[in-house]
Image 1 (spheres, protein in one colour):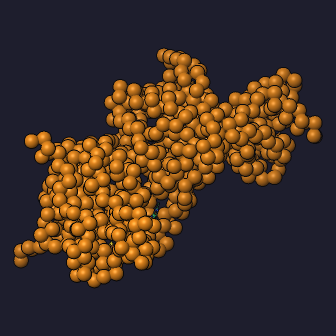
Image 2 (cartoon, helix red, strand yellow; image 1 turned 90 degrees about the horizontal axis):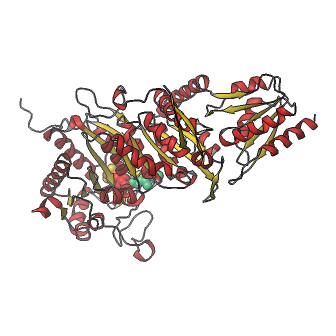
Image 3 (cartoon, chains in turn yellow, orange; image 1 turned 30 degrees about the horizontal axis):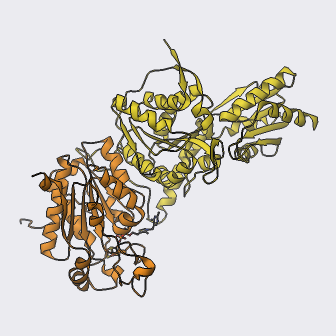
Length: 354
Length: 249
Ligand SMILES: Cc1ncc(C[n+]2csc(CCOP(=O)(O)OP(=O)(O)O)c2C)c(N)n1
Ligand code: SF4
């Protein structure tokens, strides 16, 4: 029987991570995700896992590198400035094909910015924020339920493809309370089969090496092309999205996370007035659900992108549309929030232009 | 025929790339021997840094990971906490450990993390071509201090063992050198002690090894050894700085 519990977003994330069988957390405090390490310190103790409050985000991400290389499901959480510090480690982790989970409870930037919810780390997340050619799998929950559910999915994808995964949420999702249905079986970390690349000590086998470099002429290029093939497989197989009323829609909104909830509220007002609006909510931001957007653009004339940023995901929407449709935008950078009335007004404006 | 002296099986067959007279090769051999003598090769996970010893992941015949510049103590922490039954050691240069990785080093020591750090102090950045290191001596030339380190402009060197000895955390800190056979034997003893403390779950050990970099210093291997004895060891005195096993008594 599925049980339902009222949970804080950041707490649901912690429960979801532990439900997913993760027993290693290392992190450094930063608002608006402090409830994650705080609650994690209690829960990891209860389930016999490792909790480390580190000296920096650099240390945290490198502890993950070590723990995951040794076969642990390992995660950290932080917010924007802390995630910036983790990019060095993420580049190495991606270069070494090691699965880890990083949750970014995004705040307004750049710089210290403010602690209001934002979506301005999209580029950093989906375009690889560190150096080199790599991608991280990025999942964008839009509810407390998904904060609970996505860690398991993220670990599964990360391990399937041996690739770091990010959860991109924001302070609003982290701080709100919603009912959560505890679905599925909790993962027993001991039941996870040993992988042929884990570092465990070379007893009875050849030694193993985890590295991100190859200095032999042409070899790194070869290696990176193989990784490119992996990325193509992920792009082909793992594009996830939710479509709301898209079948008969004349205008399609594209929005993820918190923005998608505002978008849905705007959509409802529009539908009440008889305007056929649909919502396409990317669940994976990388791989971006480009195929469905491309498909829709063959019949939809107007798209509206809503982001809590100056406009970042809009570039991926435009790439998918390839100039077939018009792309309109509502943006609120630096911790500003869109609202439903604003979305409705924009829809009316777009229609008026026809 | 009986083989009296050969490559220890703690090292791979791969030919090492270190310059003639470099101290890295000697310390590699010591670790390679100890992995076998102490029967820990099959539970060891070694951490290779950024610097000349980046290829240590090819040389030690055990599970290895190559990590970002300076972050080895954090990676070591992650491995050890995830797999406490494994034996975890990092091998790091002075640029790696005392410049970019200062925070990771100090905090792993403060936590008394149950890991062993082998710290190669050659007072210079070898791999990148001989620039000033945090350990470069006052007056010592480097490619970014061509007239010699000017402490007014470039600050003073960092004595890592002394610095860490100011913390309560570390279990065992010792500075040794590999310039003479006698010192090499002492180095092996210190590293063996450090390894044993980890096996006994005592916590953090760091062995600082004064090591020749003839290439970076622009001298011959023989001059490099002399310089360690005559100059470097004066600034970086050898000896045991901390041994909590002895304090307890
Ligand atoms: C983040 C980062 N900064 C700089 C470098 C360039 N780099 C490579 S090795 C090195 C110095 C290493 O010196 P040391 O640790 O003393 O080792 P040695 O080469 O002397 O063995 C530097 C600065 C790097 N690889 N990564
Ligand atoms: S540059 Fe110096 S540290 Fe590097 S291999 Fe040569 S002698 Fe050794």
